[in-house]
Length: 293
Image 1 (cartoon, rainbow, N blue to C red):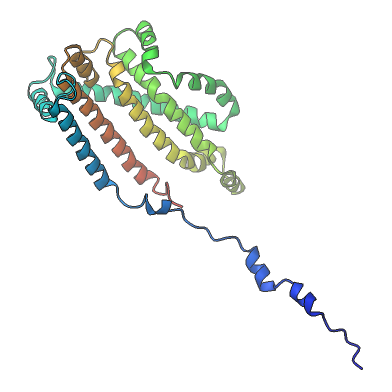
Image 2 (image 1 turned 60 degrees about the horizontal axis):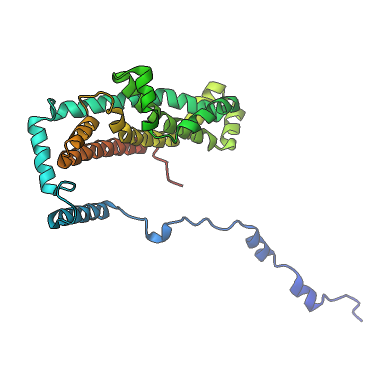
C-alpha cells in the first residue's frame, strides 16, 4: 500500500507559475511618444505655404477695397516705399542709421539683462532667502506693460538714451531671471548627491552641475527676452528719439503713412526673427541634448 500523499490537481492549478511571476515583476517597456506622427518632419514647406496664403489674402483684401486704401496698402505699394526708404532714407536719416540705432539699444539692454539676470536667477533658485526677497518685486512688475512705467523712466532718467536702455533692460530682465531660476529648480537632486559623493566643492557643483543643467532653460529665457525687447522697442523709442525703427513707425503713423508703418513693422519682425533663429542655432551648439531622451 502506497502511503505517499499525492498533490491535489486543484492546488497545482492555484500555484503561481515562476516564469509568469518573473515577467510580471519586470517594468513595462518605455514607449517614445511621437504625437501620432503629426509633429514629425520638417515644417519649412508648411510655413512657406502659410506665408504665401497670407500675402495672397492681403493683396486680395487691399485690391478689392474691402478695407479703405488709407489703412491697408497693397504689398506692391509697401515694397515701393521700402525701396524709397532704402535709397533716400527717412526723416533725415538713412535706413542703416535707423536700424543701427535700434540694434544698439537692443544689444546694450540685452547684455545688461543677461549679466544681471542670470546670477540673480541662479541665486533665487539656490537660496530661499534671495528668492523670498526678490520674487515678489519681480513677479509684481513682470506682467506690467512697459508703457505703464515709461513715464517714470522719463521723470527719473530724462529723455536721453539712459531711459530707453533702462526701459528695454527692465522688459528683458524678468524672463532671464525666471528662466535661470526654473533651470536650477529642475535640477535632479540625485545629480547633486552624486557630485557631492565624488567630493565636488561648492564652486565645482555650481559650475559643473548646476549651470550646465540650467543652461537649456537660460538660453530659452534669453530668446524670449530678446522677443520681449523687440516688442518693447516702439515704446522705448517714443522718448524723444530721432533715430530707430520704432521712431520710424510712430513718425509715419502721425502722417497716416500706413505703407511706411508696414515697412517698419516688417523691419522689426525681420530683426526679431534673425535674433531668434541665431539663439536657436546657439542652443543646438551648446545644449545638443535638449529635447532628446
